[in-house]
Amino acid sequence: MAATMTAPLGRIVIYTKKIEQMGEFYAKHFGFSLCRAEGDRIFELTPQAAGAAILLHPASAGQKEGQALVKLVFDVEDVAAFCEAVRGNGLEFGKIHQADGYVFANAKDPSGNSIQVSSRAFVQR
Image (cartoon, rainbow, N blue to C red; front, side, top):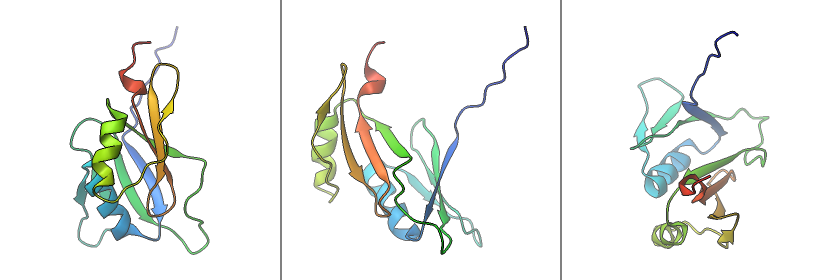
């Protein structure tokens, strides 16, 4: 049997026309550190703990922002507490939904991309 190669997800690229707003949004509400090398058009957001980095890439004129085919899900143990905390910083999540042993809530980032906070990662399966 051949060995299976694995590769962890390290980065997610978001194409946007609002790079500065998006960088501030993910830093303010989710604790990412902002990093942009001199002359680089990509803005890198690094998580303070484990998790994938977000690369903000300038969208071309023909690219539409806010596609609903991808959703960024952030793992939080207490969804209600997180939603309440970020509300004070100006981020409004929708209704908290009950799922199979966990809860989640949805919102949009400044470019209209779907984001979610979920306690699913903390449920024993």
